[in-house]
Length: 560
Image (cartoon, rainbow, N blue to C red; front, top):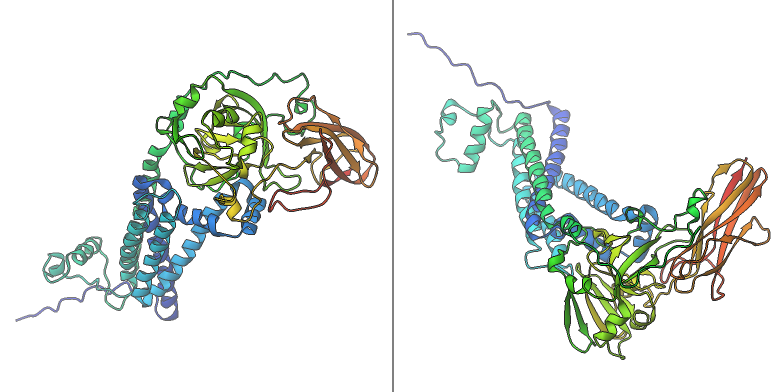
């Protein structure tokens, strides 16, 4: 009898041996952690399509960071990144998550419980951040928790090929004869067997890892992309586009001829700011989306009675006004760009408050945004500033979503953090003693009138230009008071009075220009403004915190 010895099964794809193999295993473990985090975030983003975009863990954690970090850090972010501060925050959060996930993958390569606990902690942090938001609803925790659970499963499955989990298959196994194996393990084993993957308990199954990694990447992409598409159902752009602004009973005055120096002086800021160019500084990572048909503005506190108004109620009023108003952010540094002018349409705020019986005992209006933000505005200013309004339109169209659609408050002469509540859904008449609004809790001044300010737009700082006559030009503002004069100094010379654009309104910034003959050389240019009521801009330098920056804008230029 002749016997034939069957050839042994192919050896496992154990990868490089020794130190190189260990390093490869560690790199793949870090990649496993990263991929499991991507799966967790993708699944969480998908679940957030049902609970709201702000409940996604990265957004929830980012919102919490904005709330908790010191004011100096926020100011640094605004100075460094400008209106892109929130993009920078989200990007930074994702980098931290990626590093955390890779470290977890390395640790979990040896100690599985560390990986499980680490991913669970990630979910807990996201869930706590989501439920801690002022506008959080009952299931705000769900995306982070579901994402963490799926992330744990993904991490464990991705680590199996790196730690010698059994991947040796015989014909019997392929035929399903391992009846005692858990169902889930059998499915994975059969899939690997069908694709020709082999290995043993001591081996590094690279093909198995890349198979699992590709599947994880696919899950992350599908769930993340699906979540993004499904979250578009919250978008109100189409509903906004369907609205037609009412005709104001009191239109804005026509601009006089030559009112906009930008038409004749290159480089000076235009008199009116396009919506797309208007500055945006707020704490909302995801912009609140409020459907016009669902909008309600509720008055509470020291009014004659609690009253609720729909958007239709506000649009249908017969006393709507249209005004050109310059807004300024308190975070604006000397010479900064966080100011802009638009033509606004809205309900006159003073009349609205009086007809609803605001109490004479109220000295603060606590304005509430749909995302839970609170802005404390002085009741006296709301009543007495002539052009204060509940704005519904901006530059001829309904408010852009990122600028407060469908309703925001505007009180000329006050920095935005005490007057310009966006996505306004509630006004409570109360007192400063009874309640500290969001920014006041963080030690910003409770009342913050805008300071006299001026800025050089052209020539730009550090610019080199041919010697000869060159216009020095820019803008100045002192809302509710107006600009009386602007002066420019070259080096340590005398102050020279600039030419002002025609006066339009005290609530509007004013452009100015001073043609100057430059000989070749380097020059220091400085500007100062004086309000129409005689207050000259101070030279004393102060940071924006706690009530707005002060100082004179000064730049260095070179004539060649």
